[in-house]
Length: 533
Image (cartoon, rainbow, N blue to C red; front, side):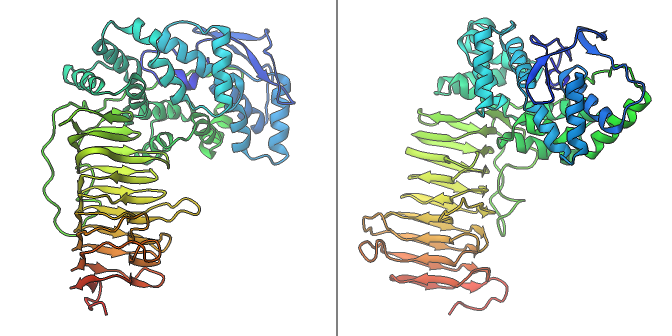
């Protein structure tokens, strides 16, 4: 197969032969690869061009085919793509067309069969997976299906522990400690599915980092810089397709210069595939770390979210059904849904893709501490939770949905990214609630959202409260705080107090919109210290 994906896995040979040799023709269809002019590099058949002198665009297209597909372009394909470049087609469009081809995607499917099932694909299975990728399935979703399949489980193990050890070896290229294996087995016993476990590994920083490093080494011939590594890992976790990442690197000025210069100097020589060095990621354990000290001062990047230096264990979505479960030190790609009492989520990161609720307490109770929640429609929802020193951002709806018997304290709600038409608030109350405390938080928002706090029991019923809003930094919105009746005067929440808060001036119409009885004392403008009128 092509060199890019195969160089990402420690111990795997770059450039294994494709099951089907196909090429892009001038019309974009697929045709047979030429048989003549082949040189052997390991097990890879690479066509050696006979042209003595090539233009820069010809050298570029040739390099893309070799680096991506492990072969030289056929004459029609070379002519077609060179003509497209000379006609003004941007390099990113050309590169993406090639990385989105059936040939490249077939190579990913073949590699998945080899990695997780140690066999070649059956024709019907290969065709089915290819059709799913054409329809939008990402490689991590495809590999989740393979890694969690009954065939992979039975082949790798006779127990959950052996299967988890195999995941560490096949996905991360290293052995696992007994505590790591024990933690995953415990999570599976608590209801985490094999699919969730597999996806957690595939979307972990450690695994995605190895993919990005492999791309850089294969395509750019160098190690990643720290900024590039972090950017691409986050993009892949958020749903960017591997094909798109490869295309952007292939179309970069750095790749173009390297392809044209190096190919000019070594015309006729097959490139040597780059083999990445396995990264030494910190070994995470299931042992809880010391809890960070209570927040001091205004909540922000330095005193909310995962404590600095804490290693995280990859995980997929988790459904908790056992009381007293502790989720500590996890990098969760997906949701946490709770149907149990006294659940703890701490020192963890929970990442979504713009929908769903990050942590949803459907029944029972939970404490959420020193955790980052990003990229969901709503960060936290449900009743019976306490969230302390939580960093919530990137929500397409609301930072949190307030419920009854909840406390939000010392947390940072910022940089929401409202979906079109969304009524986005930092924290929103739409029902008649009781026992709500919002204390010492920093709502650092702008006028792109509706409000920092929206308190309106539109869905009913009326309730006796209390709702306590105190000691917060509040900014953003049309009005920064809405505190109004519900459903045009049908429902009311009593015993609301808004006290000792510091308001910013980044709003459209003012700091407060209140039409119900509220205790308002000690509220000031943050910069000037002037009391709110």
